[in-house]
Length: 326
Ligand code: HEC
Ligand code: HEC
Image 1 (cartoon, rainbow, N blue to C red):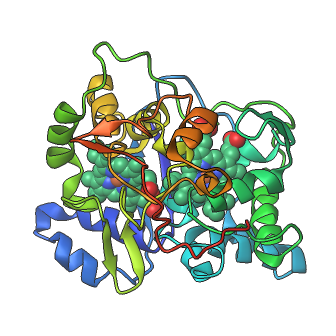
Image 2 (tube, rainbow, N blue to C red):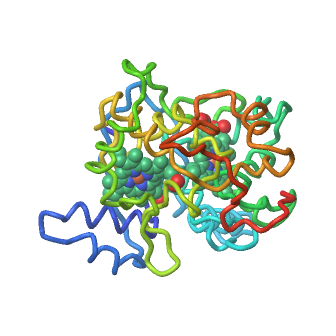
């Protein structure tokens, strides 16, 4: 069994509340408590693809050097990216919503595993991407944002946080625990109607019946999965295979690997067949058709008809102001 321990604000409270649910603590009690910082521990079943051999350093080892202060700032921005709301972020996500345990958790695309593999070629933009490019990409798509400029404090801080997390990690090799374990192809074609049932039973309690998430004031307790507050149509998570892999290894929160592979595929198909902020690349071309043809030749439903409506066929960029230049 592997174990992770965190001091995340919201998820920490969630998990500790769930942990004592036998004592009658309800989700609403937890929500009221959403601002309290506390420790929690989650017992994780063994992931399917073998052992994780790298452990990032502990925050308690940080000093007050200028470098370590930058690490702290990066950590803070990573778990509360909403601090950049309105400037670099135009949805309700934090980096740590998809990179769990503040980017430390193996099989949740951990930052210590990402650090040493950039620069790398990415088909997405058909060029060699530096680490800064890669982080900027998550701002543009996952955060429906305007990426901070290279050399700007937020980008330097996040990059320094990653550099620190990767202390003593082997360089330029894909470490075990990077990304998510890949599921085998679905036995049956992923089906959003079956997925709706999985969602109602396993996910709605936290993410809401309408996928809009739950908040305490401005604070995201459970991130939105579709609608204005969610990742946009250009984000990696909108792909059904990527979401299925993430969900299998990470959701429901505190019960990873509990869904069958088929349920993970089906619920990913359900979540990702809802409207969300437009792919920002729509601004560079004339039509949904072009976006689909140029950028969506992969496992997603952008441009397809669901319940009589074509997904992504709109110019609603959520809260993102126009025009986009990042
Ligand atoms: C909506 C979910 C989501 C959010 C929010 C998000 N990311 Fe990601 N991120 C992903 C996905 C999906 C991948 C691709 C994982 C894979 O398939 O390896 C990824 C990959 C990455 C990678 C490359 C990982 C690797 O191993 O190559 C970095 C670096 C990264 N994200 C940084 C960030 C940062 C910094 C933020 C906040 C500004 C952020 N992400 C927010 C979903 C998200
Ligand atoms: C106990 C509450 C809980 C349950 C149940 C739960 N989630 Fe989550 N989910 C979370 C939290 C909290 C996060 C953000 C993680 C963090 O910040 O540490 C999250 C993150 C996600 C993300 C990342 C995407 C984003 O936009 O931030 C996806 C996708 C997701 N959950 C899907 C699901 C699915 C599908 C189910 C049901 C199979 C599910 N979740 C069940 C609490 C839950």
